[in-house]
Image 1 (cartoon, one colour):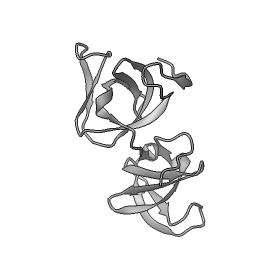
Image 2 (cartoon, one colour):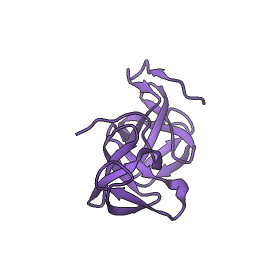
Image 3 (cartoon, one colour):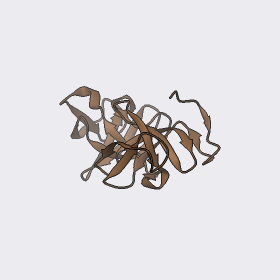
Image 4 (cartoon, helix red, strand yellow):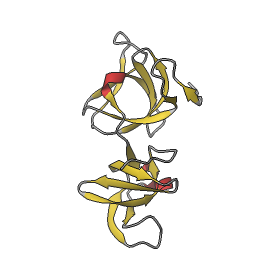
Length: 151
């Protein structure tokens, strides 16, 4: 199903938009009801997903790999998270003290790490995971598209 830019008639929120998983086990269904079969399950709290459509209390989501399925809205959170450069294989990515390639490196995150988003400038995001916090180029994370100003 193609995503469209707009506002949902069900939630009044923008579509598409990013959210995260509230629970450590979340079933993804083939349709918008408990009667539809489970397609797969997420097994980690905080994973970001993109809401691309809505039907009553169900959200059609897309994950970082492009897979789509339906999740009950009560299992989703507005808390923002990202996946650090899953397309980079087993690379380590620099987390910097300040936004900018010339800023000192404070940590290195493995590709695929889930991190909380503190805020984004449009080209850099301040993220936190496992007690480490710093800035990463926004094009090196999946789970944000627009500026996020969250302090």
